[in-house]
View 1 (cartoon, protein in one colour):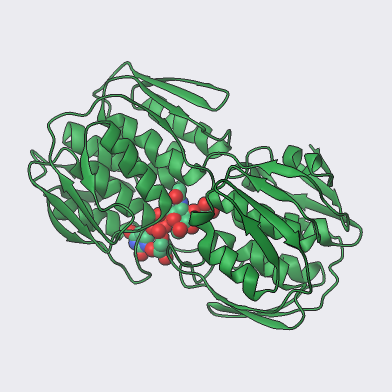
View 2 (cartoon, helix red, strand yellow; view 1 turned 30 degrees about the vertical axis):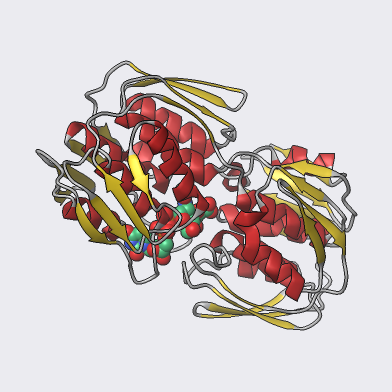
Length: 419
Ligand code: EPU
């Protein structure tokens, strides 16, 4: 298992190139199950989650070449419909193969993904959506069996106790594209990754309108074809590097980014008293001042993303006062709190709320990465801390950040990956 050693308290400088979005690439890869024709996906980040999805698609009859960010996906067996536990359990996005398999073959058997360190993460909304389209669903021995002679389409309200669901919206959208009649998804997730998936499905011949709004309409088509699609850039990686920049008081520039996908984050930086400028595809940290404390609530897009909560909590340890972070999407996503406290932070958690006492000087320490974004928070803390930080179990980081150590080194950070 690799660990990351960071010698902190150094300024960074220069530009960082953001990679393609993991959360866009994974459902788009699953969408290739809707056709037997060749599909080409570009700007795909080289991450362990992408490699897991490759293995899963291969087990479902695809032949895949992955070279320099380009996936070429062909079909060798179009009848396979079983996604096994050993591939689904490591990554929840695997459940997204259910929609396209059900849509094209009329049947699928997909392992239930199970729990996860950031919370319970059920799949009831996915199932509710498939049933509303006309599928029969059975849960047996940890697997979800879905079957339908024809999916008839329909109007589906896809809101849950925690708002909309990104992957449920994508999964149901993929099942509905080949349904007999029109489907309308109400309370659809509005995330840019849903829009990217819808654009890709439309290239395949689907008729989807309204993606990016809470009401998506899907008109029926008979067959879908192959496509070439360039995945959008990763807004969460971009936000993470911006947090690193402010934490290390560094005027870095983030390239390959859509500022429109980060409006909540850019607005928050203003409240924090930081001067940031953005152009069409880059964001620059212009002037770093004392960091004002802020109150953040994580929310579905266009609100502040839960996937940046941990990184910003590390940043708020350096603010000049007390901040409050409320986690509205995953109320248990606080694994980073005890580790940050070991580095000298002063964070008190009470349910879905964390109170962060600022004005801290973080100290290097040995810490444990627990999930993807918690690991990124520890990297930020390590970069700003005095002394040496060793982050164990960084395979979590490799699930979502393409060559993060190389990118940090290029910015001048003292970072070393060790076995
Ligand atoms: N939820 C339900 N029932 C469902 C599905 C979701 O109650 O059937 C709840 C969840 O438990 C959560 C909320 O709805 O409280 C939102 O979850 P959502 O379904 O939107 O999450 P997801 O689609 O499973 C994607 C990303 C996550 C990201 C969330 C929220 C992928 C592969 N994953 O997950 O990314 O946090 O949307 O934006 O797209 C990450 O990259 O670190 C990550 C966890």
